[in-house]
Image 1 (cartoon, rainbow, N blue to C red):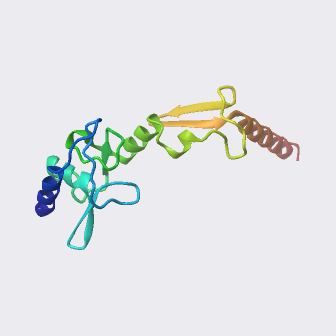
Image 2 (image 1 turned 90 degrees about the vertical axis):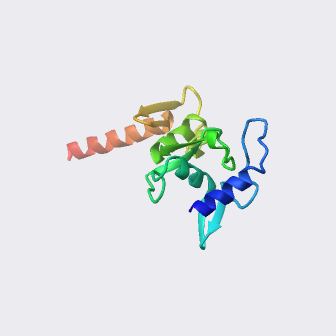
Image 3 (image 1 turned 180 degrees about the vertical axis):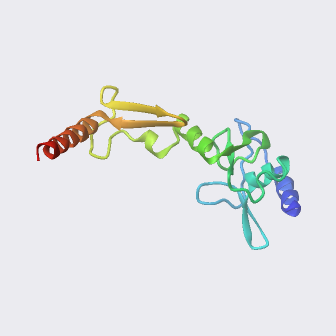
Length: 153
């Protein structure tokens, strides 16, 4: 693993920071744009390798921890833009910053628009969910009608 770290560090030395201070990995990347490097027929994430050497054994063979990009740039390998977090914290960060898949949706599954008057926000620990008020009303009516039928019988 230390050989990979030496290779990564030598390559990072060749990178110039962009206007945001990101050092973008220009070699191999996965589909999502995260920098990767191969060693002994195994692919490693560059950011994870960098953090493993800074946090010692915390990330090594421990899948509870993830590499979080403070700059929201997957190809960035600037050690000052990387931090360690849990999967839950990483997902929460995506939602807060508007990068989660559902945070960009403008309509619910049934086609109702998410407007201020038609959107319910439910907040719970580490979660923020949007629900369509129209669909919620329809579900409530259906549920109440079903319960009413059951009590009459």
